[in-house]
Image (cartoon, rainbow, N blue to C red; front, side, top):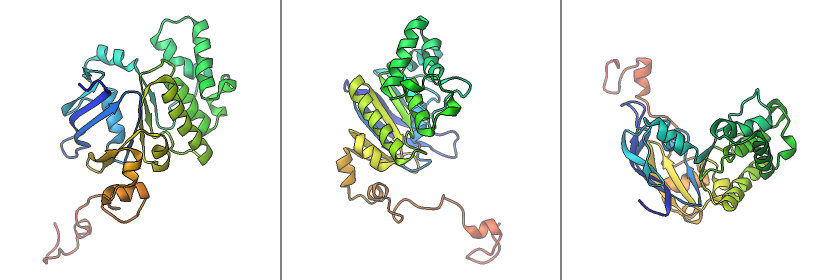
Length: 276
């Protein structure tokens, strides 16, 4: 166990079935108190990585270690205990639409602690103030914008003062101003609280601006590069260069792997005859 790493991904392989491997022998270390961004295109296994850390799924092989403890997805008592130490910002917020802003943030405090309502009240307002939305505490979720909803979800994610905060596509669907606000909040909260932050995204500029360490994943669940933002931006590796610069041509292909088109249309195969 590396004492500087809060999370260790040790030779992890995972797939939902035998036909497709989502993560392939992945080895990663997420340093305590740092912001680590995991970048990559859609379907490369970024969100699956979060699910394994949260114990939603068990690994096929290898191990996931949280603060020295191997996560066992079938041990419900362990998962309940460990999940109290992490916060999760879901993609698009995942707020309860029938609850007010205040009650959304209060939800984990009411469900997972025995704190009196008077103290919960003060904590909720403090968390909302941290994301600039104390004045919106009594609004309905239907009354807030997309950017505000993301910040409300962040306030809920930090309600229990987690050691690890995981962000699943925190910039998706936001306008440029809201995106900048979200990025600044992630960096500020990390620095103020001392938490460890794991950001899953495909937004290169925002992640490069706020991260201490960057991991780049590719199709097939492979880690193709990792390093500081400056190191990845200066990389001459074709796969890294294509992704961080948004180049249309390169190792990352446009088409999803498929059999020859002639087979789908029942046309004559290249060697003669009709494809089966």
